[in-house]
Image (cartoon, rainbow, N blue to C red):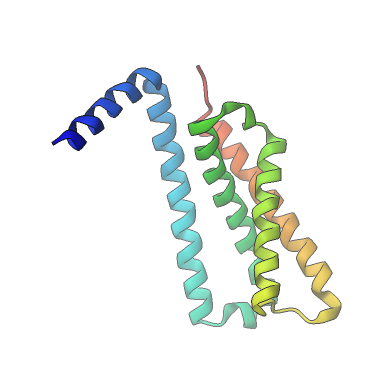
Length: 150
């Protein structure tokens, strides 16, 4: 019983701390984030099943763009929840690049990088550029559809 009361109390406190615009903004951002994430996952699974990454070497380019959008939307949710001072484009790009560099390190370390040695740097640079463009697109989506206004 005490746990239920503490959840109710937390909800009431949350409603006072975060007005209605916050809940509307967050529900829009969560919808866009999960849509981008599910789309990314479904296309990735289909691409693996149909060997699209191997048939079309360029196929990972739009995947990195979509991944950058998903990361930017997730970043917007975290920033809105904890601190609004990190809601600038430069912070979005830093966050997306941080995740993108981590992903490239994972690909290299796991041995799933699909490029030959001579084009590894070019492919990595292109992937990070697409991540960044996706992050900028995600930032535009956030600012256009669900901007934070107090």
